[in-house]
Structure formats: structure tokens, C-alpha cells
Amino acid sequence: MDAAQVDAMKQMVLTETADAAVYGPLVEPAVLVASGALYVIAALLLHKTMRNQKPMDLKGLMRVYNLVQVAVCGYMTYGLVQELFKADMINVFGLFSLPNVFGLNLAFDRRAEYFVLIHYLSKFLDFFDTLFIVLRKKDAQFSFLHVYHHATIGPIWGLLLYLGYGSGTAIFGAMINSMTHVIMYSHYFVTSFGINNPLKKYITTWQICQFYSCLMHAVVLVFSGLDTIYPPYLAWLQFGYHITMVALFTQFYNKNFKKGGAAAKAAAGKSSVKQTGTVAAEFALNNNVHANETGVAARRRRKAEQ
Image 1 (cartoon, rainbow, N blue to C red):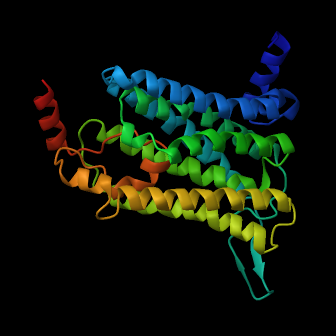
Image 2 (image 1 turned 90 degrees about the horizontal axis):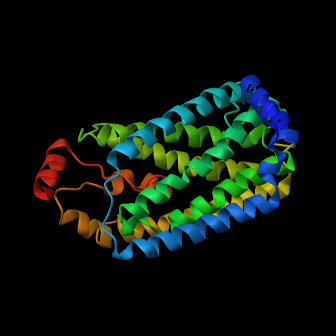
């Protein structure tokens, strides 16, 4: 990258205005395919390498990582919510109007595209979730669902940008995911100090609502005809992707968190760690690297390890 390109990138960041001519090389098809493939290869090789190694203590580094995620995701949430407020109300059969929470028929906006670009780039930051899992030897969390999600979600956002649809109704998914990450990484940061979060069950409710709201968004795009800007083939791609995520998550949840599941039985037999259905959605999809321990349980565990 030469000096002119660096200056152009700085200008894009300072003005919060996307310029496809500047970020274009980051979303080329070859980059999207390579990023997903290299992630899978690196994750599997590192996991194999760690089999005969001791788990690493990365608590301090993970706390810093959590704060970085809160800052980045908070910035994206702020910008994307502002953009969604620009959407017109939805008229229902000429009888009444509803808030346009999905941003249907929202006009293209270079500022909105900028925040979608940041969201796409943040998916590379999310690779640290996998790194922490593997280095800490949390093998039960190194699931097919986790690897599949991290390997595919970045390229999908990159594809939207490459095709010129990184704005409009697409910003809903980026917004709701960024908002959820602010909540989750804040939770992880607080509980890493052994503090029990009394809002944990409400966070779980939010996680699951966020997960299915993305599926509902896809259903609306495919079947309602309310959005005339987003191309049908991308709507079907979104719908198909979320169907795979629902299927994989349901399988993962039934196996690990329903009564009688392997992980549920293991959790019941270990009073020192509480990582069950209360954080199932995020455990399965995003940052499944943090044990949610109460202050007493955490102190007992640390004392036993000394």
C-alpha cells in the first residue's frame, strides 16, 4: 500500500464515508475465499498442535480483547442505529404505519456502507475467539458450528460490499450483531473478575432474540416483497445461510444444553463452573471462550489450582 492509498484510507476513516475504490482490494473474491479457507486450516492445525501442550492462562489478554470489542462494536452500533433512523415508516395496506426496524427500501448511503465495512473487518478481529479457545484447550467449545460461523460470516459481509449492497436493509444485521456484541463482551469482561452478573438470563433472552431476528429479516426480504432494492438472489442467500445456522444451533443446543445432554451433565457435576444454557447462543456462535463463574466459585477454583 503506497502513501496515496494510506492517505485515502485515512480520509475514509476520518469522514466515515466509504469509498469502494479505496477498500475494494479488501473484498475481492479471492480475498474472501482465502480468508475463510486459511482460517479453517490455521484453526485445525493449531488445535492439533495444542493436543500435547498445557492450556495457557490468557485472562489478562482476554480482558483487553473484551474492552477492544466493546469499543469497536459500540462505535458500529452508534453509527448504524443513526442510519436506520433514516428509514421511512412501513405503510401496511394503507391502514396504519409501522417502524421500519429492518431498514426496508433504505436508500444507499456511503456512511452506512462505511460502518458495514467496519463490521466486515471486525470479523477478522473475531478470529481471536477461536485462538483463545484453542490456546486454552477448551475443546468442547471448538465445535463445527463455531468454526463454520467464523469461516463464513466475514466472507458473506465482504460479498455484500463487493457487489455494492453494503448499505440499505443490509445494515440491520450489522447493527443488531454489533449491539449484541457490546452486551456480551461487557458481560465477559465483568465476569472475568469473578463477579456474578444478575442480568445473565436476560442477556441470554437478548441473544436468542437477536439470532432469530436475523432469520425473520431474511424471511421478510424473501417473501414479503416490501424491499424493492435488495436483489432477490442475495435475499435467498441470506435466508439459506440462516437456515443452516438455525439447524446447526438447534443441534448444538440439544446436544450440549438440554437436560440429558453431554455438556449439561458435565456442568451439573462440576459446581465450580456455570456455563450452561444461560449463555448458549453466544457460547455456540461468537465468543465461546469465557467461563461464567460466580465470585465464590472462581476463588475456589484458583485456590485449588495453587
